[in-house]
Image (cartoon, rainbow, N blue to C red; front, side, top):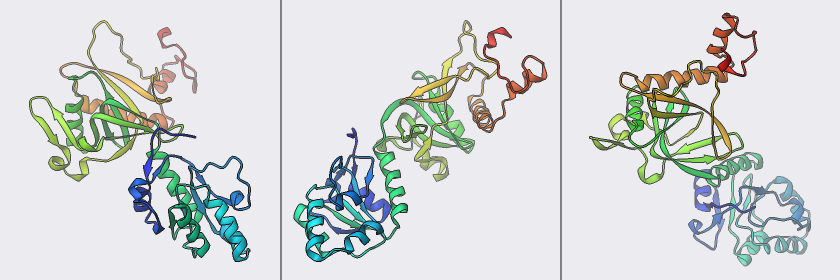
Length: 318
């Protein structure tokens, strides 16, 4: 399966502290574009149908023990057929000894060869995590991403509505800034969105009338964070007296980003409303809902408007 993005092999080597055995190229020039990792047991046995040569290849103890059974000529033949497919990189786990024939084939077909001291399953989990993040589908949204009481809150709204000013007040109250103005959102799994800031504007905030500030330098390292899972979307908009806003908190609005629905709120802005405190309460309330408690539902149960454990389907009836 082809992906629109790629990750440099040098990043994988650096992040996972992998030993470089051989590479004919600069590791910055080797790009991995497949999110999957292959253990080549079938290929070493001679079965090459449906083999995806764009995947990282991981040789573990089972494959190593299988290869060790053969004499030098047979081993060379099997490895030659395998390396002839020219995968992007072959990794040997558990710091197993590299067969001379394996190094020879890697040099012959110009395939990077790495070794890790980690067990096969641990390394597999780690590298899949990196690939899932780096190769994930992504989109950039105009907004602000902050972490409030452990909840990732994505603030959206038209330019000048007060997103950055709200973020500054939240940071002053002990919360953390992830991104301002441009939020890069990645879909790292079927249920998870992770937001970050583009590298060139990371930690910077724009305040009209003040200018550009660096949140890390002004508020300290505890005020910033590089990435955060997006748990809630809050849409900020000027107060519209003709619009009916949710007063119960039972509507369960959702915003869809990259095919994933995220709980959302619309908060109207007018003088006298402290947005930072409202967002703090919204974050805590969202955590309560995830833990199974809904204050609005409890109130309506006490008023006898719904049966215990039931949720109303149409709040216009009340």
